[in-house]
Image (cartoon, rainbow, N blue to C red):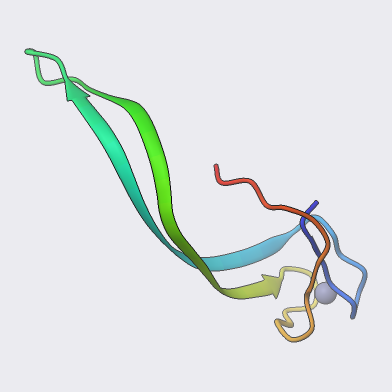
Length: 69
Ligand SMILES: [Zn+2]
């Protein structure tokens, strides 16, 4: 769990607004189907993390790495 809300103790539910620049290898079949063969994250900026429980975005603590789905 990458975040923790110091106001209510929530560690599991957040709205995360972020900008991601990424490079992907798009491999199309001759039939037009797309397969993503690789992805590289070039840049990633988290603009806001807001607690879903108490609706506050100030003071949210980063307590671990966040994976990118
Ligand atoms: Zn909270």
